Every structure is written in C-alpha cells, then in structure tokens.
Image (cartoon, rainbow, N blue to C red; front, side, top):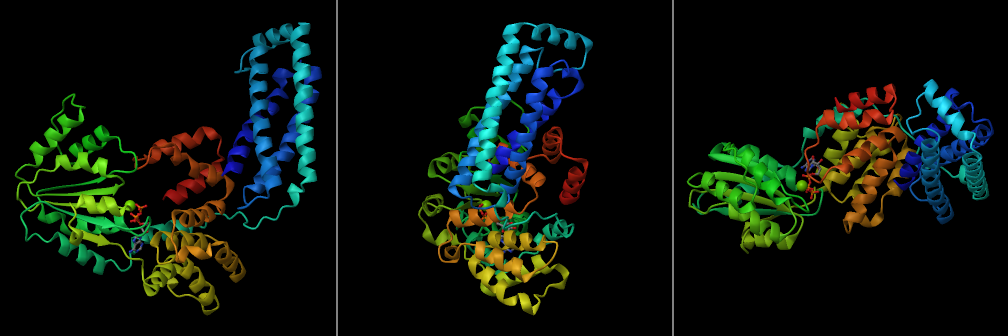
Length: 459
Ligand SMILES: Nc1ncnc2c1ncn2[C@@H]1O[C@H](COP(=O)(O)OP(=O)(O)OP(=O)(O)O)[C@@H](O)[C@H]1O
Ligand SMILES: [Mg+2]
C-alpha cells in the first residue's frame, strides 16, 4: 500500500509538470526545458513504482528507493506549488492577464534566478533517483502477481454470498440460550476470532426471533465508540422520535430506559471491544422481568464473560467451519453454478482450504480472488497457495488474516486499489453512503472505463 501512496503522489505531480509545459507557460523559456526533463524522469520512475505495486514483498534496497522517491515527490510538489504561486497563483488559468503578470514577474532577475536554481536542484535529485533505479535493477523486478481485470461474474458471486453454510446448528444453539423461559433480562455473548461469523450468526438469530419481541435493534459498537452517537442511533432505531437537543449520555440513557420499560426488547450489541463501553451501554437496558434479550458479539473473551455477568453458560463460542462445510462454501464461491471442483484442482483446493483453517472470511476472500482470475490455471492457484502463511490454520492470528486480505488487495488492478483505500477515511462501522463514496472518487480523474467497471461491480 505504501507504493500505492507513492504513485498516488507522483501522478498529480506529473500532471503539474505537464501543465507547466502548456501554452499558458510558454514564456518560461529557460524553465520549460528543465520542466520537460523532470516530467520525463518522473514518468520513468512512476512506471517503475506502478510495477512495484503488484509486488507483495520488496527488497530493502527497493523499499528504500520507493520511500526516497515518495519524499522527493512531496518536496517537488511543494516547490512547484510555491513556484506557481510566485508567478501568479496556483490556479493558473490561461487568461491573458495571467500571462502578462507572469512574464512581468519573470523579468525580475531575483525570481528567475531562484526558479532556475530550484529546477537545477530538482533535476539533480531526479537524476540521482533514476540512477539508483537502474542500479537496483528495479525495472527487472519479477511481478509475481499480475493485474487482473475484474470478472463480471464477481458481482454475481457476491450476491451468492447469501448462501451461508452450516448455520442451522449454531442458530439453534444460540436460540436455546435465549429461550424465554426466564423472565429476567438475559444477555448472551457470542465470542470468537475475527471473521469467524459472529455478526452473521447474530443477524440470523435476529431475523428468526425478532417477531417474538415488542421492539428490537441492532447496534454496531466498534473499537472506539462515540458513545453519544451510538446511543442516539439506538434511540432512532427504536423509533424514539422525541426530538430534543439532548446530547448528554445520561439523558439519552434516561430516554432509552423510559422507552424500553415494560416492553419485551431484543437488542444485538455487535462488535464490543471493552468492558468500559459495555458498562455504559448496559445502563440503557432496564431489567424489568419481561423476558427481554440482548446478544453481545465480541472477539474478546473477557468482554464476553463480563457482558453476561459471569454466567459462563450464557456464552456461545464460535467454531471454525468443518472441512466439509469449508469446501462447500469455497466451491460454491469459485465455481458458482457448476458447484463442483474439477479433479485437477482438487488437491490444490484442499491445500488452500487447509490454510484457511475453517475461517469463513478467509475462505470467501481467497475464493473471490480465485473466481476473479480471467483464466483458471493450476499454476496460478499453486502460487496463491504458496503465498498463504502455513501457520494460519494452526494459529489464526490477525496478522495471518491480514496477509490473506493483503493478497486479495494486491491482486486488484491499480485504479480499483485507489478506490478501495477511500473507505479507510471513514470511522469504523460508519455507514458509508454509496453515492457519497462515488462522489469522492470522481475528482480523482478516474477514467470513464474505470467508473463503468466500478458501477458494474457495485451492481
Ligand atoms: N456460515 C457462513 N457461511 C458462509 N459465509 C459466512 C458464514 N459465516 C460468516 N460468513 C462470511 O464471513 C465473513 C465474516 O463474517 P462476520 O463478519 O460475521 O465475522 P465476525 O466474526 O463478525 O468478524 P469480526 O470479528 O471482524 O466482526 C462475512 O463475509 C460473512 O458473510
Ligand atoms: Mg462482526
């Protein structure tokens, strides 16, 4: 991703150099030559940077070169911005006024001298960086993962994601923990590693049981919850319309308690990370013997225990998918309607699945990656198998999952990688509106073809 950031800086910079070569700057005779030189040098470096984006691991020397180029690009951009400001404003329109103003300014020896000096200095840095590029043979780097176009089938596959496997058993178990024999408020925790399917299971149970309750809501919490916002959103989900300027946590809690009192409610508190957050959220749930239920999902065992007040028997521990169910999920995702793995892919599929350790998120990510390959080749699958850490199935750590997600990211074409990074600007669990996201992408001069592809992928 660091390389992506580097070429992300480089592209606008090359654009600025191209602008300086345009008609409106043609009076800058001496400077234009230097600018043309810099643009060509940067374009060559950018091509190398783009190539590096497809590589998972970089040699230390290559990494250094990439970081060096990134720093240099920032400096160059600052310098060019100052330069444009000096000669008439960053928004250099082609107005006659501007050209006159600029050429008048350039006549002052001081400005001309400074600009010429700076261009010389930038040239020296660019030459040095390009020489290092040749020295490190960066252009010869092997691209182990080639760019792939997104297969139009992929959107269909994501819709098939509704095809969950092995949910009946876990759903029954959680439902029995929630059974309404007790009138007291009961909290059930679902605990397990990231990507094991906690949220999916809680959702399934919610869909099945919601009819038995007077009111219900699903609230995502996340690592650093903004408590007033979270409680306010719970208020809205429960249909509390009393509009007031209330924004103090205890006032919102008071309102929630009043609303929930004497009702049988069912609330899912999804993705809870710490006990402090729970200590606040739980205050909103009155205990008045109506058979109300709360499900908490969390990755953290201590939080699961504390949420159900140390009733260990109220905890449901997520289990990984069995190898048979893993294969079902994988096969339906990769082969779609064929739903059968060709015999020459069986062995490599089994090895890939072994490395996924029964984790649905890992299986889906890898399956989607394989499904998106334009051609199905065993060699390609074996390369992907080799890229997966062997330790993941034994010890499914976040690092292992990250490497699986990274592999999938590395296989996106460049323009989609940039799009993919945008949602990272939003806080965790924030509801991202599709149109808003597309508006953010637009000014980045994404090509029409690219936008069409994205629309197709979004359905
Ligand atoms: N039983 C299943 N069958 C098929 N796909 C599943 C199943 N369970 C989960 N998934 C898929 O796996 C992915 C991860 O699931 P989910 O978000 O529920 O995990 P999680 O345990 O809540 O993770 P986190 O701790 O990060 O919140 C989702 O894309 C979901 O659709
Ligand atoms: Mg979750």
